[in-house]
Image (cartoon, rainbow over all chains, first blue to last red; front, side, top):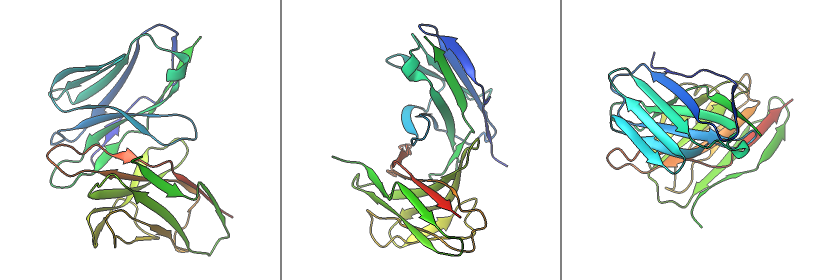
Length: 112
Length: 114
């Protein structure tokens, strides 16, 4: 069973702090990883994708990938109340299909 | 204005009725997907299609059917055989080129069956 695991939270951080969201995956064949943000009642929005070991930065967001440990993380610097949402981690299924496996998400609450 | 549209936003049906959810994209993406999301759970794949006139079952296809007659459209029918159809239904699409398997979601359809 291919799985993506996330702590459901809530993860509570004060405004201006760094929020750290973590994810582990079981399929060693996975090559691509994605972070989605989902506001309550809305659909997921892609915010980061990462394909290589190391860090990838985009504005206040940094995705980190460690394939040896099968670990993906998302750092949000200078957290804002508008960052409060559920963050979904997804891993490519591997093989010839474009299927993704999603974690159940981590709820982030940024306190003003 | 490129994107994915789903209609309707909210849908109410009586038990025993089939219902069709619409999904249209103008991103020129080859692949399209249907997911279901229940409270506190992750996204579960219902069906996906990588090319016109071809589609595959996902993890929870029982009680659902799809068609892919046009590249832009991938409607989902929730049949009366689906035992627990009330959920948030999400359509997504992606290009198929190398590792460009980023999936983009439509706004979703919230289905309530009573």
